[in-house]
Length: 314
Image 1 (cartoon, one colour):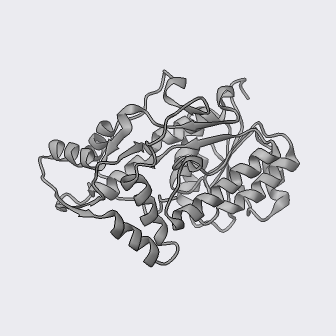
Image 2 (cartoon, rainbow, N blue to C red):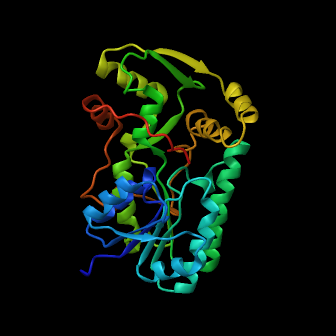
């Protein structure tokens, strides 16, 4: 293994955002391990990972000995486990504590900066689980990096604009549409996450992905789309109170996405706090890299429309 390489183990690597991290880890030259269930039905992506050089580790998060053995093989552990598996990370943390060799643990954050968000009850309950993981890591004194990647850009442009449905003219605007949100391309989330996972400057820090060109309101996004496509969209506003009511009436977990929309596109929770000494913004750390801008991301969709993913919330 070369001096600047780290052996990286990724949980949730076959999931939506985890797959980008696996590919980024391999691309950046790190020996990459993917922990997956023995009965996983995601054989195509696992075969793809293997063809790229990934090492597939089969096991379950409740198989303690297998977890410890897998952790002892690597330097860095990244969890991209999605809801409702958040609390399973406590089992990963126990394995890390016993193994005693991990140089960095990145838990499954990658969304809003949960220690600076106050959300509607369904989303708040979800965030509390993530906060519980953070506090457990800090208490265990495991070296960590907490990543706030904000909104998955390709997913939300799909969700908001429906670019794979060119004849769809109706668009829903949440609240006034003026709240600012941070949209980050998933490929960039993958690359930057692997970079911060192996960077001494980000050890025991919270890293936020918030480049200025990726801070945009929903109305700005719609206007940009209309200019690029020459198509006028029919905007229908849904009020904040209507969203709050939906969050109260929908069953769990259907009430969580609605509550996320409220935090992001009504309250502007991804962009309404200052990045001070206690936070690190990723852009200046790696001048050789550039986040894809929202403008560039829309161009990507116009050249190659992508059908929306089904499970990117949370």
